[in-house]
Figure 1 (cartoon, helix red, strand yellow):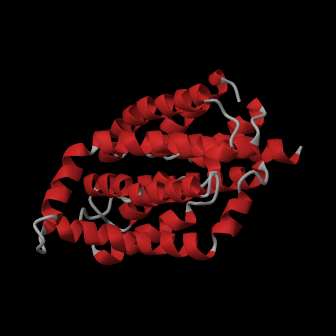
Figure 2 (cartoon, rainbow, N blue to C red):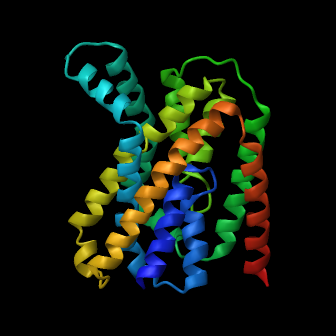
Length: 261
């Protein structure tokens, strides 16, 4: 993988991690176009996901600090309740990670047909969410669990995580502002946890990628991640998911046709 390829993939990861168009699906597509080695991509994904985690922390630094302050008061307050809901949302992805990790990983790099089909499913979810105004109620524990189920299903390449969780929250009738914040904060622990496990397994030691290539991908994903995260918050608040539904429909159709010819 060249430095240019790393920067291009990092930019794509930063943009698509937060925009509801599937980062895994787009990375799979661009990896095929650039002919990037899939084994290199395993270690590279740790770095670019680290960049998007850092961008989330930067964008939501005030909210995260407030949650931490409330947590360390060691009493049940709005902050600990919010963190408890995030904990509930993590149950489904924890089950998938513990019992189906190998099966999920086998889906990555397995071809573009699955990516295209999942992009079409993302388009459908975004379409229904864009038509659903909801009643603006707060996220309950039940809602948190259902949103967590959506996140666990979105491990499939091509099915957007942010698109799935935000669409699910909106269709449940939750407040737009709460859905976008909850969607981005709930993913921090799973990504950090998966990256930590991959590092412990020695993904970096098995990678031949130079440090400059990894750094280029990290910086690119971080900078574009900050911009995309802020943009996505505005889009959700204004109810502008319809255009992303159309985009996923077009790209998904092209990918499906491309994979079949």
